[in-house]
Length: 212
Image (tube, rainbow, N blue to C red; front, top):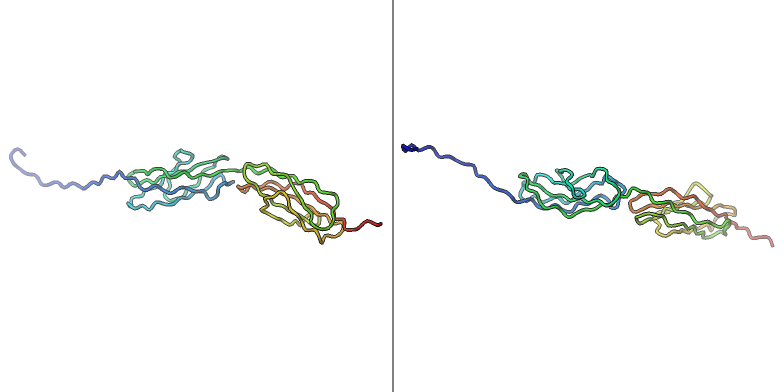
């Protein structure tokens, strides 16, 4: 002070200034894409957390902030049909936020494809290979077909899945005279949506030669 009295020394705590954001997380990916699940679950590669100060992830869906996540996973709320995006950032304990990750994408499709229509069959056929065919299913996504056939005109049905072609040949070489060979088909799109089965069509085996 003015008369020469000296006070004790003051000790100040060391303050570390940290303005460095944590690492950018990896690209989010949905469990399936395309999918008919309109509440998809996403995961992404977690950051290494080299600085040891990781706090949480920020989740941005379709460009807008949605929520925070303590771990590298997020389940969307109900999404509309169409294309959606997800980005994430990492945030440290001081609030420093990384850049956004690469966008992840998911295509939501909850609409079932149209049921195919079976082409007409001849009333009678010889024993042997019998080919059934059907129309293209109307859908926005790639479609495969699940065909069912019967050697007795109805249940039980034999199922053949994963068909890309619009036809299937049934081996009815051992069918008896008068047996009814029937077929029906459904469409399944790339998001696993299924149409109903088409109406069945059939042909009757004629194994008896005409009398001369």
